[in-house]
Image 1 (cartoon, rainbow, N blue to C red):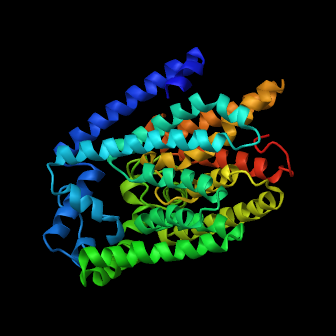
Image 2 (spheres, rainbow, N blue to C red; image 1 turned 90 degrees about the horizontal axis):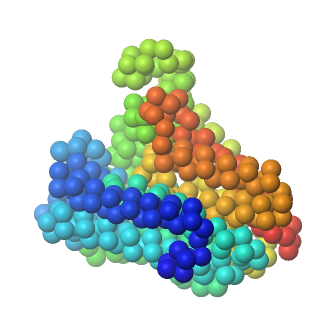
Length: 422
């Protein structure tokens, strides 16, 4: 880190200092929020305590008494929070924040190792200070609420490296761990499938069984079957569960496809009566969610097609551009996309920053400015650094779309032996 700081430009140094300070402030904020008991981390702790006291399937049938929120972590992910619930809530928050900061520092090590093996390493390494600014800013928003998103993003970066090293068992684990805790990250098994990594796919299946059945079975015993069934029935399939909450248009922070489309295409009194001038139709919410799911399928199909084209021309170097593309695609289709999940998109910024540097380096100022503008606009929108009055109109979703479209173009124009960020 010291060497990176020394080699950074004066502007990058100032931004690094500010981003590190912001990260430390959010660590303190997590402790304060945990003390008050009104954050996501508090819900996880209270759920962990309830499980330690013997509660089972009923955990997913009720809302948290203090906040009225769902516990959206399945049994496979509750073990760490059961341990943390045995401590004072502020101590638990300090430990969790420290763990997440440690994972962010690990990401720096991963980035350096990945960059060293890329054909266009010069452009990536030159933009590393700005990448770390984004890493700390996006990570800080996640730390503030005590989410698990930083760990997931680190798994995907780690997968880029170990997959290139043919370490199939570890690669499978790094894909399976986020999927076991949040389900939708199983999407990252698709790059392995498209690349015909049969041994990785086999290990993904093995680790999914271990993480979702064996480990929870050891922790919860016979309760695990009813708990898992209750989680699926109440949090995923129930119209009043966590999955359908992603379509709630009321929070300005909800910049997911469902929430944005419901604002425009449907009529929800709790939202539209408060914003009578907001343009909207009167389509049923369930129908709007169906439309959103169709759009998700289209995004996935386009991403798969472009991924296959990239795979046919790719060199043996780490598949950073491929995983970056899938990180952007995941965020575009993410249910209930909010700022605390923005760190998911961090890998998507890396090829964009490198492309900007390459363009400026060869004198292509116009394309350099375009790439830099994409990175800046996407960062502002993902961090939701705009007034709520703008967020209600869904401009936050433009950020991941910009990254996705940029990476689609990058991946679809690559030829064998060509600079992958060009």
